[in-house]
Image (spheres, rainbow, N blue to C red):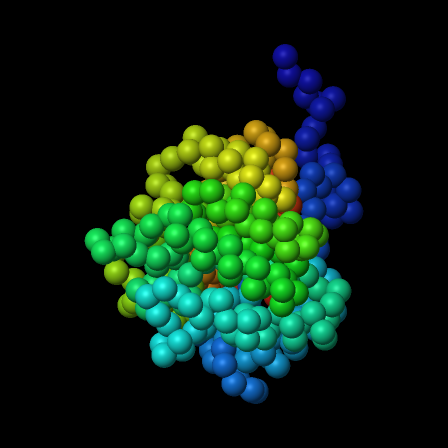
Length: 329
């Protein structure tokens, strides 16, 4: 039965103050994590052509970005290294170097802006000469258990440098439990694990591979360990396993094309769920804005709001600084 005109849903939309009052989802700078790319040197800024407006920064520049994050109310930054070709190897051993770029940046950030959280990527693709997230056998298959052992060492290396959140993005089976046990045994009881629990074998990652220097290195694809975009029930199984193994929060990646996965995970487990608005998503918005097909500011805020509305506690986004500035407006 219709209750019109006693009930007019447009009443609460009629003015800005009322729309704000009745908003069901609120986006703030505290919902954002800012991914940053680290490169060797000092005073270095290298713009990334496929990610307009995003650069690689030397450690001093990373510290400056950390101070920006603090001042804008962004609670956490995420670090990804650009590893020079001569430091890449089949076994990704640079990941275990206690003075690698990642560890240098962690230490510098925690010294300069200790109040900003530091999230670190755990996977071997920034360090391998073949571009895969793990170790290969003679046939080119990414082996699970030996890779997981290396990831444990990588995680401990980053935790020792001061990382606040370890974020395994490799999608190896069982690695969350191994990393959690190792962190506990090494005294890092308050280091969080944000698991890339539902990371899909997506076509949206291309610009990121430019950013970390792995474009053109990858032999084959990552479909034997990253998830099939056709599957959602499998995502719930992945999340359940990672939570059982000790993950504090979980991530869905990519973001906007996988809103249904975010919502299903949140509804099923009622745990902190994050999404990564990945490089391809960012590049698409930039391309649309560049030709006048979209209002960049409006689309940025709308897409981030959509991710939060779907169930996210927070979003990793290259727009973190820009969005925080818009929200401070």
